[in-house]
Image 1 (cartoon, rainbow, N blue to C red):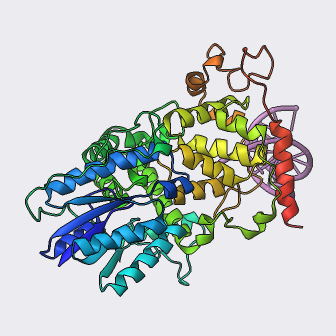
Image 2 (image 1 turned 180 degrees about the vertical axis):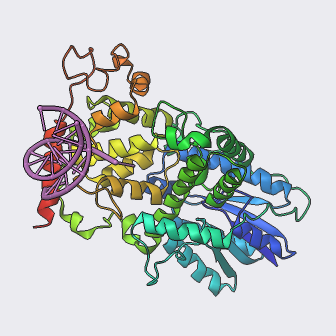
Length: 466
DNA sequence: TGCGATTTTAT
DNA sequence: TAAAATCGC
């Protein structure tokens, strides 16, 4: 009776429901991971993310090898092509049960359903686990048994679920056999060769060190510092979370322990609510699959006539809009594969409201660059900014990127770092160099009038009501 | 986590 | 008369 664990978006040995279940019986355990480059391209995975995933799939194979669990790396072009090698592996290894943790994108769900049917025919059992979130997906519901579509009541319910349930992470399974030689993926698929340098260290241990360092050194100031992109105010754990090297549950438990030890309660509470946001958006994806099918959560916004993406879209992508904070943020994204969260909102709102370009194009571009690209959160964030989503920004509440820059980068340090053309401007002028004085050579004038475009966007949303 | 116009309030 | 509160997009 050999057990197979299929790893996908859960590249960890600690706190892994599928792995824990597979190791429970006294049976041999095998592991596998499927490389699907064309599917990844269709899903706009970035080179940074693919390289992160491959590095962590290798690290996982090493950790599993120490537990006596051999890893097989399978190759397929797309999800559809992955069923055949998976079932072949099951036959070769005489697998009795396949264990995996659920994923919630439509293509992933279709793939898993098709695999289950195939395995049923072969008399192989399929065991799936709701391990992507802190509270199992689908369990946080209103008193009427409906899914929440507003964050605040969701998070209240989520918090009391956490208090009642006191979830604890699964420990790393004990070794089930002698160590084996780890398998290794050496090839990076061609499309993903060109990536920025790794943002964070590789491996589950490194992820846990970073979590501990954040909680002991910076989480206390999180509430005060997290909105200032020039500060090191955020946890920087998102690449690990997005790809399952860390679980939300591990982060939550570590944060609650830090709270119990008297850490700054406000900072930790604010950070915990970010973990709740992650669960919230995964639940939205689960209950409303249309959001992962390029559809708006709010159907009436489907009729908005977005501007065709032309030169303005190119300028946004490349960080030459003439709005310094937008350009600084886009250059940070392009050069590092990561963007500060406040700036994700600022740049997304600028694209969707001031340039009035379809949020789907921005969503796809972010995915194509981010090392922490995570369907649920990225889609949720974009639809929030575009006012097409659940609990979205009201359409009339449009960020002014210059005001945001003055408020959250008051000395202009962040802008100065990423837009060196403007380095000589003082803190008064750097947020809006087109306002009086000479614009430094090579830096463009704003490609859009912020005031006018804001008014037009509000009018277009207003017209939906008539 | 908006902004600007208008009305009300404090002195 | 200026600051604060309120209103509507």
